[in-house]
Amino acid sequence: MLNENIKAIRQSKGLSQEELAIKLNVVRQTISKWERGLSVPDSEMLVSISDILETPISSLLGETITSNSQEDLKVISEKLEVIALQLARKKASRRNILHWLFIVLSMLIIVIFIIIWKARSPYLNWDFSDPETAVAGTILHALEFLFVRIAPFAFCGFVAGAIMTFMHK
Image (cartoon, rainbow, N blue to C red; front, side):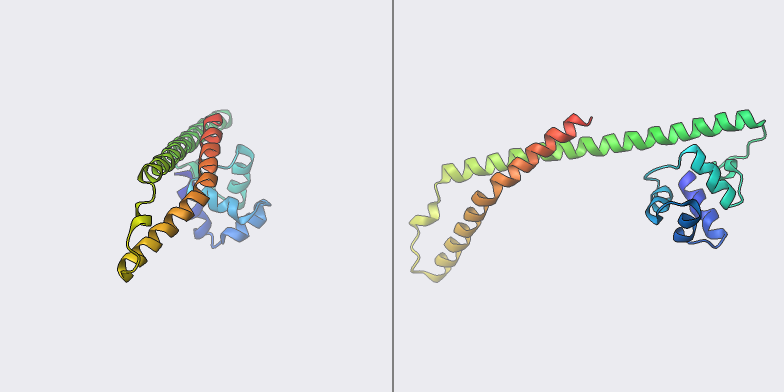
């Protein structure tokens, strides 16, 4: 809601993201993150946005509040807290998905290594005088060669990624 309101009011005032960013002394990417809902401005920045866009904070947050100033600040801080909590949950969910992806990819590399080891390169016994067999054998050998050379580095990266995403939970 906040992200959509900032974007709509900014556009209705004829300001680009860059122009608003300059007026707020932030980079354009910050405005973009706010408008895409990837982050939220803190309470001081929300007041600055309200001043620059000449819009009440309550309008930015999507409601018309008709209470005194102290209650306005309380309502605004509660809304910002809810938005920040939603963003934190979304970030934790993404981190959890990434964590399990790293684990699955690590396991996949181990399984492929076991399959290659058990198969013991059966294409080496093929008759390479036949052109089709020679091409297939060469391709299999190249794939196996590349996998065996690259997979250990990928495996280390995936394990490190799984550990790092676990540590930041």
